[in-house]
Length: 150
Image 1 (cartoon, rainbow, N blue to C red):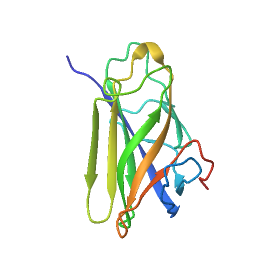
Image 2: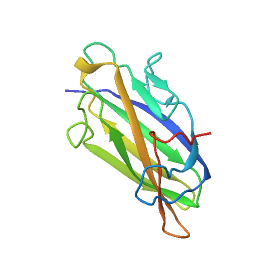
Image 3: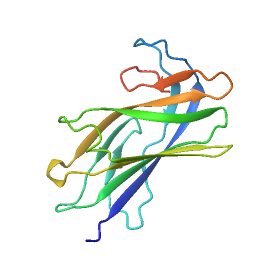
């Protein structure tokens, strides 16, 4: 069976790194671009949102996957991971079977694959992005619950 994969990229720009102290209230100040569809055959309005809150609308009968690429082109930071706020209880290894982290000296790209249950379209995602500052090793979070994005 040949499955289709749709992809979008969200570019991240960090303006102020804030190390986490384990409590709510500390969050990196960052700008996340709206999702840009980079699929081989993009569909109109499949990826919607402002980057931090994302809605994916899959076509009826869709049996493929959706990939979200988080791109950080700043050598001072690397992407460590992502944590999703569940939408309809959809979370975890079965929903996101593959998360790949690719790094170079100048950028970090985190690719998240979602199995996209076609019975639950549109799919709304809210997520936090875990980032590490290279010089200090400190960890910070771009957190959707904290209003710091500019």
